[in-house]
Amino acid sequence: MASLKDMRVRIASTKATQKITKAMQMVAASKLRRAQTAAEAARPYAEKMDAVISNIATAAAGAPGAPMLLAGTGKDQVHLLLVCTGERGLSGAFNSSIVRLARERALALISQGKEVKFFCVGRKGYEQLRRTFERQIVEHLDLRSVRQLGFVNAEDIARKVIARFVAGEFDVCTLFYSRFKSVIAQIPTAQQIIPLVVETPAANAGPSTSYEYEPEEDEILAGLLPRNLAVQIFRALLENNASFYGAQMSAMDNATRNAGDMIRKQTLIYNRTRQAQITKELIEIISGAEAM
Image 1 (cartoon, rainbow, N blue to C red):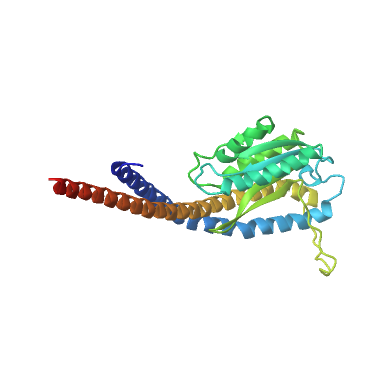
Image 2 (image 1 turned 90 degrees about the vertical axis):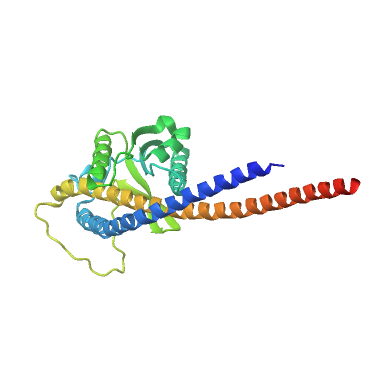
């Protein structure tokens, strides 16, 4: 059995850990508000951008001069998985849930005879994926030095992805991230971004509005498609940022509660042990006195 001194050290250590987790919870809560506001503000813009391009692309899809980002390569053999995760841990299942979704997609594609490549954004996803797919990781981008996410970060990622697509390194690109729903709910999401998935209007949606474009659709799409790619990636980064702080806040809250439970149990054991030791010493004194 541990000595009373060891028990006191253990209780003090647990209390110190509890203070750290409580402080991390408060920091995550303060950062979550700003991150959540940014993610929610980006959603309408990204959705509207996607809707406008889908409207234009409906007329241009299948045309001989359609941009490659819309028409694709005509093949479905090589897939690039753009996996966006966090740079730090202590956030529950936030990082691992994104990686799990990407890993499941990769294994499903490989079982179909497809070739899979990974573009990792974030240290944690890279560290997990390289254990199984080290040879398939073609690029890793670390954002630890970025103090505040900006559209320029998404543009840089989009340029790298488009350059690889133009070079013929892959046929399909799918973006993986975690969509923020609430502090206790983050939804791992997979979104195909190359070629662009154009949603066809439902049959009962009524007559669609007809637009005339100047310049032509192909010329508009040539400029809008790369920007839309950056917008969708930027949205994913913001959603991830909010999801990370939400998951970290929840994880640190659980850790703080668990530390409190441990302190109570350890204190109870300490008091019982101390009481038993005092009782033993009293019995020895009484026994010695009676012997005299």
